Length: 287
View 1 (cartoon, rainbow, N blue to C red):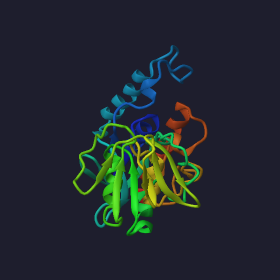
View 2 (cartoon, rainbow, N blue to C red; view 1 turned 180 degrees about the vertical axis):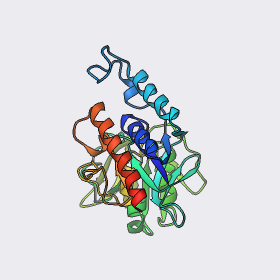
View 3 (spheres, rainbow, N blue to C red; view 1 turned 60 degrees about the horizontal axis):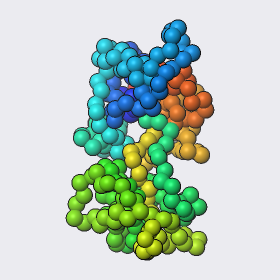
């Protein structure tokens, strides 16, 4: 049985420890250091009488997991989907694909949202955060993807077979993904999004305009909530609802840490990760 954990913060590493000790093969997909490493000092944490830097605490957790045989992959998870055969799930990364019998989402609460006027007001009315979920509704229409990295490219590639025309809007950021020639790129800064009941135009900072029927937001990397949406996991108010054992509504998919809401503390993340790791192993043994 193979458990894949997306995220290497306190929740992800705690989940890895407990899943591994439960007998599973465990892979952690990580983009590198997270919010914990940026903390100058962590105080009042069990077992540490003196303050410890976030970076050191994070590395100690990772080292402990590696000692037990947890495998860490430096990669960016772009999507999770049911597998056609063999394992239950397939995780698509930038570098490679991963098969898993169970998945634990522990990649944080949310991605950075661009500050663009009109973005929030048109959510559900032409603004989308999931190409897999909504591409079907934009068949033969003009769509745009806001973003400049691998995650934005992934969303654009999903939309290409459906849209009449697709443009990647970097909103002034440097393009970091290698695009194919069938994806148009516009690097101008976006001033606002306009429409009546639905999105109709992108207005740029230089007052130029572009007609669009839909806008997909894919800035930065996919967090737990974005990955959950693509898989059909319920999301409420930007959080992933979970049961007593950190299970989601999709069997075999668990969530832990900031993405579940509540107290944004290391102790809470560690507990939820432990519960998710144990529950994933129990689920696989029953199956």
